[in-house]
Length: 492
Image 1 (cartoon, rainbow, N blue to C red):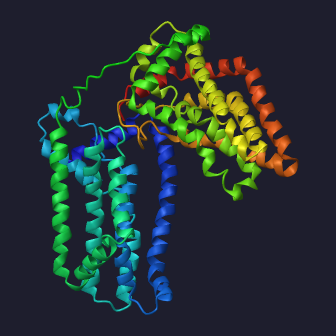
Image 2 (image 1 turned 90 degrees about the vertical axis):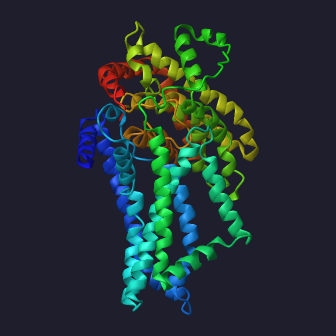
Image 3 (image 1 turned 45 degrees about the vertical axis):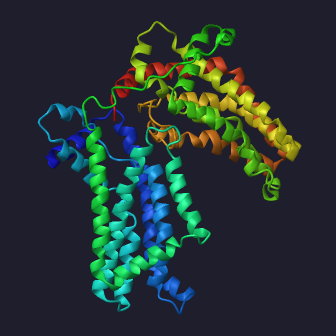
């Protein structure tokens, strides 16, 4: 049965409409993985000699054990945001004579082979081998390494338990923040010395190998809890019944001032405000608006005018970036229905463009108080706003024609990477890096004012050529129309 499950996932991977883009992003992530493997491997090889040089009178193994607490809470927090339970599309299997327990065991077993579980081994194994070469007892070192591997798996399953209790909440990341932050605070203020407790525990396992049964039992408990939680949700009709909420209709009559794109703008505004995932775009406006406060009050950045444009592009274009990168994926749930209607695609895209352009103007106006830190900052923000309207809006609309991944709008918004593909990684180059590089080059070669003028001119050119650019972009979407429909019909 496990062989059949693996065969199904293999076919799902290669037969997906987004296979080409998924393969590209997987290759890119492969290089990132090799980078982290090299870091962990280097840490494992250099940890013993490094600690011996820094603390010649202390045992490196005891020092490592005392710092394991920080690794545990850090790993737990990192996994919560980046590791998800590898649940495949199992509902079709529920109509077949396949035991639910087999499906659950396969899903949980698959999670044990995650890259997040293998990565620590590149530090644990070299450090353990070093200890053996330094004449540490073989049995004790091997049991100590086994205990660390068990802890890695405990963190793996504990992460899924925390996720299962916070998945339906709006601020789903609060439980992990409270847990990790609380443990760190208690340890930092010496209320409970968790680093000493964990360190003493591993020291005890090293000295008394039979105590390795304790992490074995903890792992078994975590696995059983995960098994029960997942098995309870594994029903054919699970998730079909949705919560009933009262919808407060907003007065969107003002959108009629935008002419024939008004109906599309109304649909977009309702979609943004009524769904968890899109609603995050609204809250991100606050982060973008206050983004400059992280930099401008610091004297270091006051002497870096070339950096102002990056903050300006990000601050005035936060909605453009966060909302625009998933056009038309936001509508993937009913894209087929939308395309069957007698509508002009250009009007559909113009409504998206208008929303993004208006958001840039509003954010620039609200960010005018940044002039308190200097007139150059306001000028850089103005140039960035014009560039966002004239160039970045068209760039992000063009990038959207390559989107092929479906988004479930009912899913939680916090750290949800559903719908993210190669496009979302590559689009950052023309959106942020290019204007920053261009501005920096003009600033160092000529002057700050000329650098701002260059961005303004480019933005104005984009605004003047808006109609022609929209026709080109619209044609690109029409050429990809049926590929999108086919891709959005798939759930992977």
